[in-house]
Length: 254
Image 1 (cartoon, one colour):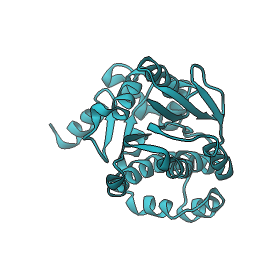
Image 2 (image 1 turned 60 degrees about the vertical axis):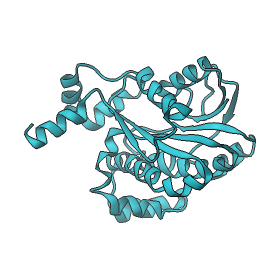
Image 3 (image 1 turned 30 degrees about the vertical axis):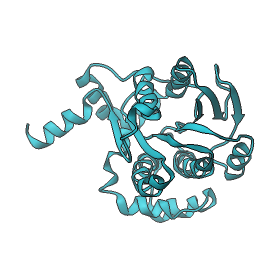
Image 4 (image 1 turned 90 degrees about the vertical axis):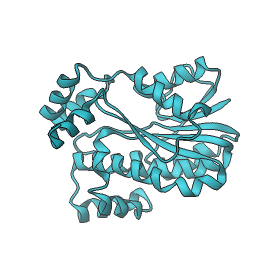
């Protein structure tokens, strides 16, 4: 079995690599930094279309699964790069890799609970779908009046919606795509989320008792990448310790 994964050097990605290796996968990692424990590392800048194309050209199939985990957190001054990496890069890389995937293969995208409002923001999400290259992002950001935090949320909304939209296209190819939406997870970028979302995140974490752990999210990613989940298609699975349930209960007065 062969797996391709982006964003494998740290956090959720590094833990996913460990679990894939334990299951006997050959793991080819695409990352700007060198990850540990993989069979092959291909350096790539996911914000740069030319770098993505060059990286994909270095591999050949077949791949049983593709895990799109590379992403940047909400951070001052990174709106352009967040959208370029988290969404545009993911789409370009995925489309280039699909011809190398085996029938019955799985694609898993790391989204976020921050993308939960994709339905409410679908017009802006669709507008992002129409952005062809990172060179077009500055005009998009200005026209849409998007700040750094909104850029992150939008990137994850788009990942969720795009995954749903690919379902019909992938069925004839005998491929499937799902996404995973973690809430706060104890990784090296947790402080970025605390700074961006402040008291709201702190309250949510306090209510469920702790942030999530990378290995808990990795377990879900590996399950969705495996044949054990073969009848799950076009879904976004939230993993948040109950944060979404608590928010819904509050909203509905349950």
